[in-house]
Image 1: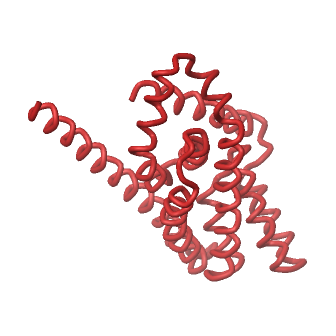
Image 2: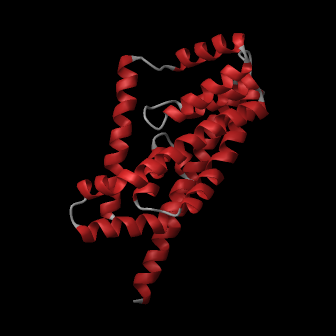
Length: 224
């Protein structure tokens, strides 16, 4: 487990660096994103959908407030079109992260973990827990991108990755865009409650999974 944690933390730190740089520079704030969406809505809803998809795809390379963008997508485009636009961007980010990491991840993994045995241990550990890690990755920012990259690095089956990515993304997006579609400036409570509720639900799922995994390990040790 330790080799995987090491790789996970290093990749997460790289994504976190972009988040800090953007926060410090003030290049990509929620106010700016909302302003862009308002401007593009005056032109055409197609431009709004394209901007949403581009922002969520860009989250693979720079830190973007994903949940906020998805909720705003529902607010500006309505539930159906907002969900389609958000899902397009999220799927592009996930598939691109997986593909790039599958082609270049072996070299990066070799650089991060020099020992071959530890490297193999990291790969096997992620293959064992990777599906659940992807499912629960929406609990906090950065985690989805990290798990997508690890999936490619460890050469997880693309079909398995795609299934996990869809199962983790579709309900999340549908709920968030619906909350955005029924929210307004006068009544932002649905969006606020949804953001809090989704985070609590996913963190609770992480806790249950971690506890169950530890219990299974203890049972295995007891049998030995």
